[in-house]
Amino acid sequence: MKFKYFIFLIFPLSFMSCEQPIPDATAVMEADRQFSKMSADLGMQKAFLHFADDSVVMIRPGNKPLQGKVALENQYANSADDTYTLTWEPERGHIANSGELAYTWGFWNLEFKADSIPSQKGTYVSIWKIDHEGHWRFVLDIGNEGLGN
Image (cartoon, rainbow, N blue to C red; front, side):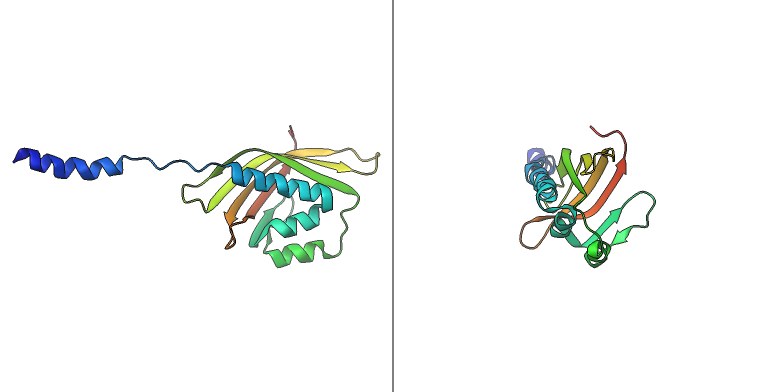
């Protein structure tokens, strides 16, 4: 009789102790690298607009947060990005167990086409989510200057 109660207690507990596998961050790291490649090839503005989620928030030092893809489009409407190249490399990433959210962080490099302007470096973190088509789109991007790789 005691053995029967033991089975009823241990059997459910055995499922509770099973750990879910940690999702591989390769997909979001690759999305971040493709984002950087598009920035190098087609310009920062096109890349940011392509990879941004509609609800994107961008936080930059000295500025109020930019909220929404429409605000991002308006920000870029009257500016050109042909005088510089912005690239970055993700150092690490992690995908939530649900597989729907992720983050990457790494180092960015801003090179100006005019030799008289020194390049700038810094760090960033991006929060990503999967869109309805299964593509990673960033929903939050934060960058700051200094201590680049």
